[in-house]
Image (cartoon, rainbow over all chains, first blue to last red; front, side):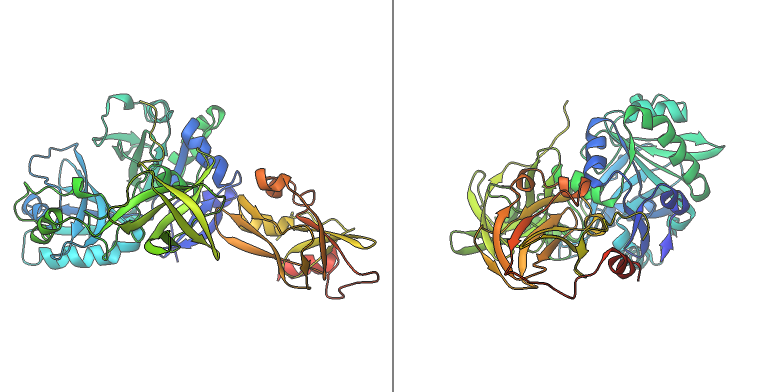
Length: 361
Length: 128
């Protein structure tokens, strides 16, 4: 089992550690998932996301290479740009979703922990024979997510920068304990926030310092459980749930993350075809009208007809309602009443617009 | 497993229910250890008043952000009362597990379940 550079700190903070994609990770701290979730919505939350795959790509051929393996175009991206993209097989199914950050020298790909080995193998196979170095820096670095409406204040205050000047999906560097920190204005919670990558050994002291400064303003350390309920409210997809090798990006409402102006990415032909044909399935959001907790794998019905499967579900702490996403036969119209089979009972739910939560402008 | 509260006047099932037997009426809830393992409780399903249950049958369900768990009848009996407060405030199970009784069972006079543990026995079980 791999441990992040913050492991001892998590234990000291009374985290409950669980196995996640080969890592021992905090699923919650003393406050519990619901309070952690609400802290992120009201002030801020700190997450250790060091389990996420971090792959450095360097060499003269990298830009061309990324045009081939990513569905978004990186053609005009400059140092300091970050791009959310998918990686697809030639049949258009999704290998992974990731954020690609253009650094001064080379690129950093931040991908799902569960796909780290698969992504590495795929990238190395595609890069074979070209002038590209692919280095897995996951275990040499720490990654923290600093998320919440108070994130600009906290990051500015602790790192001595004007974090408010960094626009969404932009990157810059700062210094912590004379080590370089890569900062992107990105996140996976539906709130404003930043993600910080720095040398592994410096992660714990930065986390601790952020927490000390943030606590009096309502910040909490947050585990994987809160991360999952936050991203669910924001309808952000999770690999293995809303996206996978069995779900194409059009079905997952991720067509926006596919740029057909990029002429030669792997999977383009299949996705072009998928875009022109009406999808047979579509990801929809629903909230329970009857009380019950929808969970991944539960069946969704329209009258007596099975129309889909829940991909993610839980109680929404912000809305105080049971919510979920489901992959359903298209067209499943909004405000349509469906039923979800929960532990042997068919309970009423309403298909609603996505997302459940978006942060106040 | 330290720091879990275990009132000595209650008895405990190995499936993590507590029961408080007062004559022929047995109040049933889940232990501090169980609520901690479940994490934040978001939903409970309670039986109807008047329903009969055998020992070990599922009488209620408790769902947390993490998982769903069944609550088993520690003794055979008929439901005389359910705690409706928990339907709207399931988080009380986390904050006050021994105040949060789920239901009360009326048992036949002289009924007992010798498999129920005292506090020390249950503590030993959670420490293995």
